[in-house]
Each structure stands twice: as C-alpha cells, then as structure tokens.
Image (tube, rainbow, N blue to C red; front, side):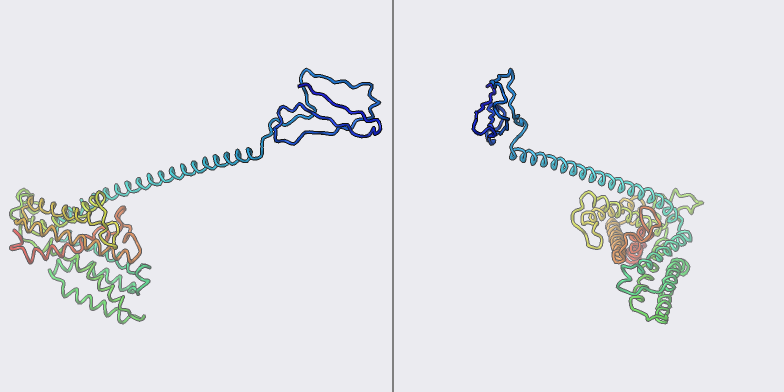
Length: 410
C-alpha cells in the first residue's frame, strides 16, 4: 500500500496543526495504540504545491519496532532461562558433590588398605620373634614377658590418668603408678625363680595400699581400686604364661617333631607339655582374632556389645569355629592332648579368654575416651592393644591342664 499524506486547508486559522496519519504499519502488533502523530507545518500559502508521492519502497514516517514483544512473553522467557541456569547449577553442584563423595570413599578405602597392610607387615614382624622366644623358653621367655608387662602396665596407668576416667574418679599418684609398674614387671621373674608368687603378690598389694593411705592428699577409694586392679590385670595374670611355658616341664613324648629336634637345641626333651600348650594357645588366639575379623567383615550384622560396636555375633561365631578348628589341627599334629573332647574344650577356653580379654581392654579404653592404649606398634597401637587377648588366656589354659588333664594330657 502506498503512503500518502492528507492535508487539510485551514485558511481562517493558519496556525492550526495539520494532522498526519501513517497507514502503512505492517509490523505493528494489533494490540498497540494508534500511532497518530501531529506535525506542525507553516502556513499553507508558502508551499506552491503539494503532491502525493509514491515511493518505490514504502517508508513509513514512523517506523515501528519490529523486535518488540509483549511483556508477558519476555517474562516467561526470562523465567525459563533462570530455571535452566539454576538447573544447570544444581546439576553441576550435584556432580561436584558426587565427585567429592567418590574421592572421599576412594581415599578412605586406600587408607584402610594401607592400615591393613601395615597391620599384616608388623604382625608378621612381631609374630616371628615371639615364636622364637616361645621356643626358647626359660629366662628368654620370662625376660621378654617382663618387658612387655612393664610397658603394658605403664599404658594401663596412663589410661587411668586420662581425662575420660579421671573425670569421675581420682587417679593414683604418679609415684604409686610407677612403683606398681616395676612390681608388675618383677612378678614374672619371681614366678620363674620361686614357682609361686602368691605370697609376693599379697605383700606387694599391702605395700601399695599403705602407700596410698599415708599420702599427703586425701586418699580415695578409686585410687585403691584402680591400683589393685592394675596389679592383678597387668602383673598377676601374665605370670600364668610363665607357669604354663616353664612350669609344665613334662616331656610331650608323642610329639613327632620332638624326635627330629636337634640335640644342640635340647632334643626331644625340649618339647614339653608347656611348650606345646603355649604354641596351641597362641595359635588359637591368633585364629580367633583373624576369623572374627574376616567373619565380621563378610557376615557381620548383629552387634555383640556396646563396649565395642564393631564386634558382631557373626564375627564372634566365626572366631569360635576358627579357634576350635586350629586347636584340633595342631593337637593332632603335635599329638597333644590325646582326647578330641579335650582339644575342643581347650579351644573353647582359649576363645573365651581371648574375647573376654579383648572386651575388658575395650571397656577401659572406652571409659578413657581413646582409641588405642598407645602408639608403640604402627597399625596396632600399644602393647595392651596387641596382648589384651592373651591376658586371661594363659590363666585359663594353665588351670585347665592342671585340673582336668590326667598326666598333663600326655
């Protein structure tokens, strides 16, 4: 459509504006208000003529904004873009969170694998020398046990003095705890020399009790109880290993390995009931810990006790089966004890002593608010963390052989 201008002549009022209309608005939205404009022109007489001009390409006087869109459409577009951006940010954050979680899981698995590897390496590194000490027996075994008792008793009294236990009780003075550590380390030596330390333990307990009662500060019952338990737990109970290894000197005549044992190392007489029983007990404790750990990892569902939340009934049952199986195998290999029922009973007592000792030390550490009793052995903790399963086992094994085995099971 051609553009045109309609001009009205007003002679009487020449200053009256002439309206101008633009009818060529092909791109204007139909909802827009009319684009009527007013153009002020000079007096009509100044123009000689005014003609209608047709352009080749229509050029409206007032160009509409072709890119203009409604406010509602712009609002919807903005909201859609914002939601898209937010979704992208959420996805990126979610992806970052998942990646961080995966990295943490990988690091945790690597840490556990490294810790397990360290435990195995140091466990083997400790187990080989301990096996040699057990085979040697005599003063070598006793002195090594005394050194372990001294370090373990020091760790015990440090646990007693920790904030977790000391918050609800008064720990014994340091000079008393140090004296108790020395007394505990002397007990295995006195056991080997005298064969019986009942009188020595009684005298030591009386001396320690008197030292607590005459101290400058007000004595407390918690000091006496923790000290007496330390003498029993760290000193008296480990002495049964000396009684078991060195006290039961009857030769195990049916042990096949004794016949081929070198004479320079003692010959067949070196393989006594005490040596065989100690080896089987040590192996049973190791089997209990190993099978309980593997069984708990594979099948553990039901917690055993609140003292140690990681222990489960499934793992405990696996430890029992493993301990009895190892005890029976070694009993058949070393021909001691002769009865199958005795082997099963000996394995059960070894398992029970191992679990009870482990839970007892876990209870002490839980009250102390610590994970390990020390840091002497990398991957294992302190001495108490490594020997807790052996503390009650020696007493149970020795009592079983002395009371229920005729001729020491030979």
